[in-house]
Image (cartoon, rainbow, N blue to C red; front, top):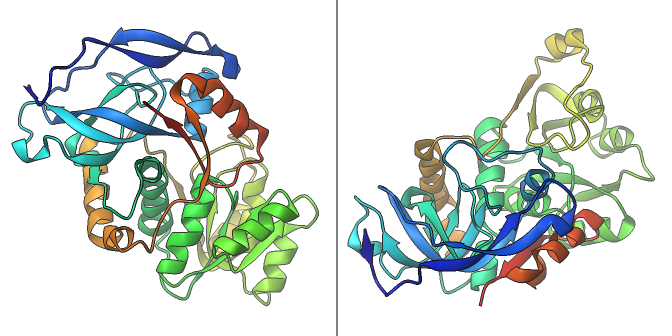
Length: 336
């Protein structure tokens, strides 16, 4: 391991004391992690707060084997140590990274292949808000959903971190974007971000509204984070040869489907979760993002929608804020 500075042996991190509500997130003193082959050690500036962190806190999304049990799937910061096989040019580099866990801490390790440079166009807080949503939206909306220019997509949770990123990426690539939101205020916010249409799912039937918007044709792709009883309704929104991509199951893991409808409309149902995927697969996604998306990031054309920042020690407040459901865009933890 190569080190650029004299590192402390211990650090403050936010641990999950037991499965439960936000109050189970507790600051603890733990050992600074050591990068193994292919990894970098990051002095964390900021960490993104994501829905999977909440699910992990509740005991429903355990860390994969070998991953840190600490929450936190994305960070920004400075590389201060290198694992075996990582080139010396990484030392001191400001990066943002998709991590395998452990982001709620003063230091975090990540595979070098999952790191991207932080350009001058971004603050470190903004950089920390990018990896999880960018990797997720790119891999699901474009790689799995095959969304392409001039197609129409339906995105649920339009003002979430994923939803806002889907709107912005969709517009960059010439898509027509319809979103659902839980209030008129959020619908207005989604349209200000770039959504072509926003449907208040609490006061409107989104299937009926999608039909009106598309002249009865339906959409080519649905990006769904609800699952459950939303799935058959989503399928009613799809036109022939449509693609349904599931990225979360907030509404339940079971769905009843009309298989004849799927056959007659030639629908494709797919989905993925990001965290269990291999380091090689994530590195491939990072390379695609660097080639196809990063020029727009560097030019200031793509920035995450930011909601609120909390100090690391107030991670419990950040989780309570997320679960209250009023946020628009990304919630961030900052590290002194």
